[in-house]
Length: 272
Figure (tube, rainbow, N blue to C red):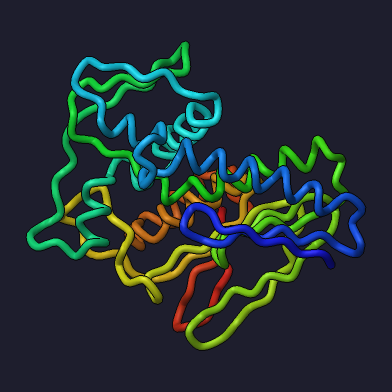
């Protein structure tokens, strides 16, 4: 196996190619160059990124977007609807408040942004919303890199963002471990993406759209066709009340499999 690593988006990305994988080094170079370019557009920690510029818009101002940023925002908007509002990229102020351990209650959502339906542009209707793509940006990046590998006619590759999100490209299957507190379950990932979200390591860093909701707890793993979808859904399911989980899973055809940690053990849940 040939493996390549690259630091971006506050984590380490890996590309793993089976066997000798002719041309793997050249593919990795292009993928990582594109990854840096994506980070320059999607990171709210870059002052000149499109996301930072959106967060600085005044009322009535419009920003025209690159194709990548526009696509990522539209995917996020669709997932916001699909998850019943649990996945929300506009909670940047509250996320910063939680991560920085600021005093006082979480700031209530305020402001309004409009994504134009017929052009790659976003308008600030009322300031106050801050975008944070932490729950989808890395997954979107893996999907984007898989598109590059497709152009290279790559046979197979496992693309990973840190230890939490993986995308198996091509016909090979890859062993992935789901680590619970009491036991580990190994699965084979093939032509699909897996993403994990949990509060065991970083604490309750995932913010609910309702500032009065209890702190998120638990650990979930989601397998889907798209890494962006898996990334967002694993975040949303952390926030879902137990009595809503069956309905959410049943009404989500984009999900292939779902595991939840129960008594320290990654346990597969029914989607039907």
